[in-house]
Image (cartoon, rainbow, N blue to C red; front, side, top):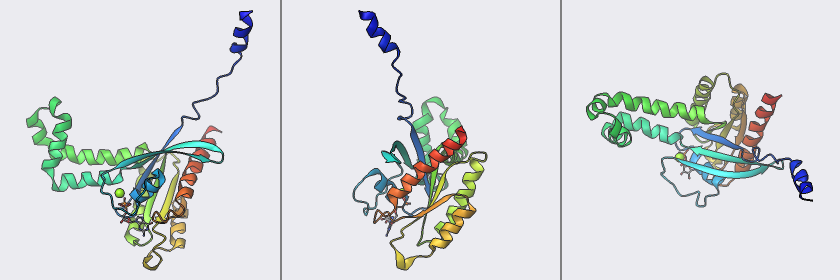
Length: 234
Ligand code: GDP
Ligand code: MG
C-alpha cells in the first residue's frame, strides 16, 4: 500500500527556513579612534582587544539568540576605509590611480583615465560613503566619552544618515564608548542620552576594553530591527 505513504507526505508542511536565514547588516560609523574596531572585535569574539590593529576594514559574522529567537548579524567595520579613500585622493593621487587602473585598466583607455582620474577618485570616495549610508539595516554611531569632538561628529553622522535614508525609519544606536576611562571623561551620560532623544535613537554606554555592555548593544540592535520590521508588517 505505497499510496498511503505518498498521501501522508503530501500533507507535510515545509518548515520556514527563510526566517532562519535572515541576516541583518549592521554598519559602524564614527570618528577615528573612538573604538569601532575594538567593539567589532569583541562582537566577533576576536581575542587580544588591547592590541592596536591597523586594518582598513573588516566584516564580522555572528549569530546570537535574542528573546529566544536566533538572529544573524553581519557587522561592517568599513567606515575607516571610506576615510582612507579621502586621504588617497587628497595626498596620494598616484597610488589611487594605480589601484584604479588595476581594477578597471583593461577596459578603460589609459590616456582617458590619466586625464580624468582626480575626478574619478573623488567620485569613488563619495560613492563608498554613500554605499555605507545605504547598505545598513541598522547603524551604530560611536563616539568616545573622552572626546567631545567625536561626540559632535556623531551628531553630524546622524544628520547625514537621515539625509541619505529620508523616508526610512532605520534603527540607530548611539554609543558612548570608553566608559572605563572615568577620569578623562568629557561627555556625561546625560549629554549622551539627551542627544539620543533629539535624534530619536537608542543610547548605550560601553567599554570595549572591559567588554562592558557590548553584548547588550548587539542584542539591542536586533530588538530594534525586529521592532521596525514588525511595525512595517502591520
Ligand atoms: P576605531 O578607530 O574607531 O576603530 O578605534 P579602535 O578600536 O582602533 O580604538 C582606538 C584606541 O582606543 C585603541 O588604542 C583601543 O585600544 C582604544 N579603545 C577602544 N575601546 C576602548 C575602551 O572601551 N576603553 C579604553 N580605555 N580604550 C579603548
Ligand atoms: Mg578601526
